[in-house]
Amino acid sequence: MKRTKPVVACLLLSLLAACSSSQGTGSSTNDSVVVGGLLGNAFREEPITQNDADRALADLVKTETGGALTDTDRQAAATALYRALSAQTPGKTIAWENRSSGASGDVIAGPVYQVNNVVCRDYTHVVRVGEREDAVRGSACREEDGAWQPIV
Image (tube, rainbow, N blue to C red; front, side):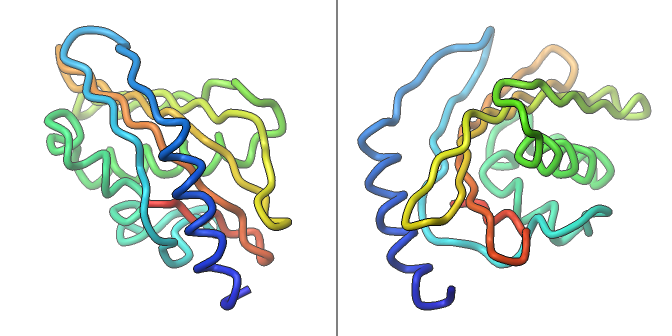
């Protein structure tokens, strides 16, 4: 699998660049397509560690709303992302909420597709903190060991 990572990353980067588009989800929404190389095992099994959550949500925390997330918020958001990617049904909304901080969000994963026999999914992650809302779109691919590798 290590030899195929650069090939998969290049193919997915090409696909994402060709298919990228923006769509608003409400007031003050930033959409960005997450592209780049494959990360380490950010989504192996629950519970998700803080380090894994930070890596998985790297693009999200760059947004105004995402930057306001606490460590607990980021763990809840990363867990919801893992669950959405692992869900059998495309389009199923996985919600998360931290009542202590008031942060919440929704993750929706798209249909499964394959690139060089690697299972991948696109997703949209909407995060709300107070009156602010940001959306980040990205992709992740599943490793042979079941871990989801976000493309960032």
